[in-house]
Image (cartoon, rainbow, N blue to C red; front, top):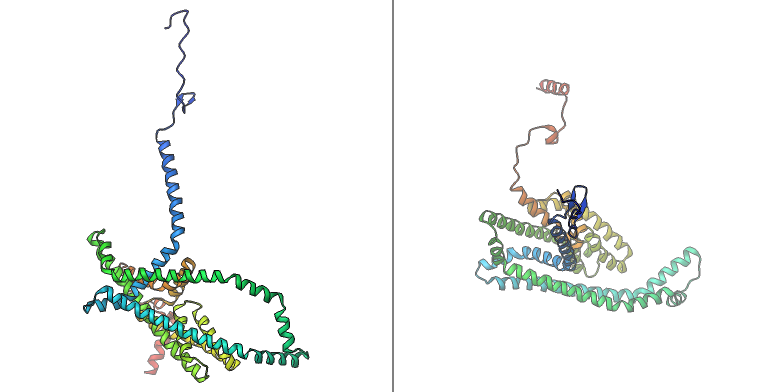
Length: 396
């Protein structure tokens, strides 16, 4: 009990950062500052990773394309390496053959287009006269080619088009240089992946336990088989498509029929979804100067052949090489296009086929019951069964 005449000593003030309440001072938990710092650090790392991913998305897509290209040439490189050739030299020879074939095709196609454009420009006045005569006879007008040419040359849209084309030359040059750089990047990465395939697999398996190593190697082998099978089936369908269109173009006496057939075969098979119609546009353009009706013949043949390929040819070939349902293939192409654009559409089918084959080895399957609803037969009622038995007995 304090002595009389002396006031009680007041309690010391609470330290900074401590709240006071009815039950006494309330202190901040010691883990809260650390948790806040950790949350801020994780958020900063997430933002940094997101920024880096968006900056490197182009490089990652190029590496993905290079990886599938390396898987496609792996069978040829492996066979050449088994015969005693160095793997680097074998990879170089395979890529050299692909490069020479691609350059030859582009040069042939470019010369064909240049000659056809020159011919169309030389024939343009005659086409214009025919159109003007048809308009004058149909609508009873008095147009002349000189007046139409003067109105076109003095039009504002033509002047604006020329100005935009002149200003866009630099953009086109930049785009071409960027495309060449991407192509060189893809070829370099694919060359390293194919030439150093065994070393890459050893490096990957060295960080995995033995049980996982077998699964990774098996997945790699499936990817090689499915990618090679996909390219084999596409190449075979390109050969058939090119041969069919070559016969048509030769019958119609369209110039440059061999080059056009190669164009239709390659573009229609290796550009998904719109490749067929994009490939058919060039033969229609080349056939128009010969006879405008030939363009309609080419269009009709392209549409009919596309249906034959979708419902007859493609299911039989893909069943032996890729083994993927047409609906799944179409869905994978749509999904790949939504994710990665044209690149995703191109690699979607071999990627899905690889995943399907790999998962199929680990999914346990059972015998299906003999039920008409499963086997595709109609289920008969008991009365109809008895009537069918009676009919069979009377026939006997």
